[in-house]
Amino acid sequence: MDNCDCIPKLYGISTCSHCRAARKLLDKYNIEYDYIQVDDLKGEEREAMIKIIKALNPRCSFPTIEINKDTVIVGNKENDIKKALGITR
Amino acid sequence: MNLEQLYDTLKKSQEKKGAFFNKDKDLVFELLESLQLNKERYGYMACPCRLASGDREHDKDIICPCEYREADMAEFGTCYCGLYVSEKVKNLEMEPTYVPERRPAEKIL
Image (cartoon, rainbow over all chains, first blue to last red; front, side, top):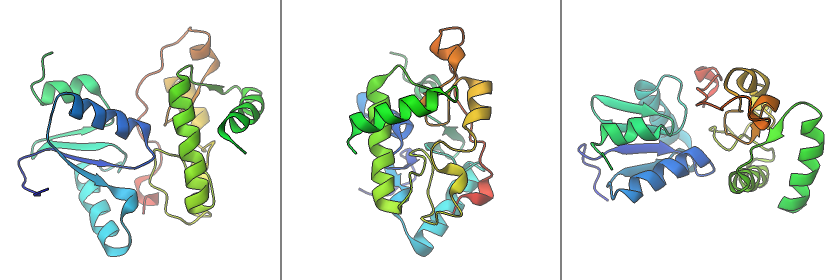
C-alpha cells in the first residue's frame, strides 16, 4: 500500500467499534484509504504517530480521519464523512 | 468467564449504578470481547475505544467502567464507547448523541 498524501488516512484502534464502523463505511463506498492501527505501534514509532494525530486532532481520540490536508473528521460521524467524500447516496 | 457470564455479571452490578447495556446487543458483545482482549493484552480492561498505555496505574481512569462514564451518560446519554447508556436512554426518553473525548490529551501516550 503506497503512502501517498492523496488518499484519506484513518487512525484507529483495533478494539474500537467506532473505528470499525468508520472503516466499514469507507469500504461500503469503495473508498481507498490508509489505515493506521495505532495500538499496534510501540516506542518511538508510536510516539511519533501520537504527535501526528495530536496535530490533526488535539484530543487524540479515535477514529481520527484525515480526509485531506484541509479536512479532518473526529469520530464515526457518518454524514460528515460522506459529505467530505462527496458521497450523496 | 465467557462473554455470556461477563454480560450477566456486569448487567447486575452496573444497573444498580444506573448504567444499562446498549440495546444494540451485537455492539455490546463486540465491546465485551474487546474488553476481555484488553484484559489479556494489558492485564486490565482498558476502554476499547481509547489508546491504552499498558501501565495500569496510568490508565486507571480508563479502566472500564471509566471515570468519565457518569458525566458522559448524563450529558450525552451514553458512555464514550457506547457500551452503557443512561436510564433515560434505556426508557427512550433521550436519544444518545456523539460523545467527544473527555480524557485529557496529555494522558494519551
